Image 1: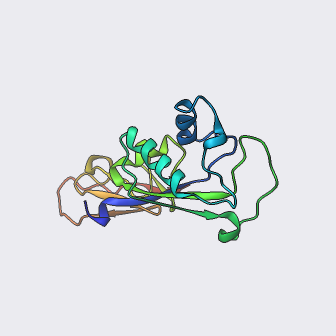
Image 2: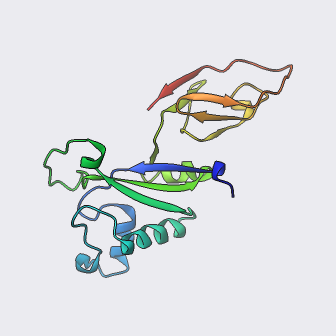
Image 3: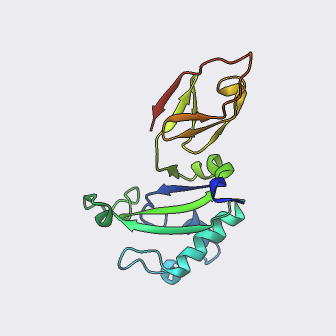
Length: 166
């Protein structure tokens, strides 16, 4: 596995132990959250890193690295909110295989860049776009809302319509 086969994705974890790795951990600990790694200050503790990696490993997604960055570190402001649907105040970044992009997007993770809307079909930033969905002959990748393709010459070439989207 080379670095070019991996991609960073991010999410803003929610409060109230509502994230999938926290829900999974709670189920195996009789819903007792008192032993869950503390987030004071807002940070990912090594124990929680392990919980996150183990959870995604069970779902077939290998997490190579992870880190967190508080909203303050990102220059974002955070409105005080105590609802369970509100973010905890940090962004979680995980490094995964590109071919796991679709799987991890089901958990609310997105890439850092813009996605591509190609001929009406959405592809995530960093996702491989098969030739038949792109220009008819070249293997392509959506890169921050732009389609990057190999340069094969072919008779059935057609210019795809690509729109950058969030």
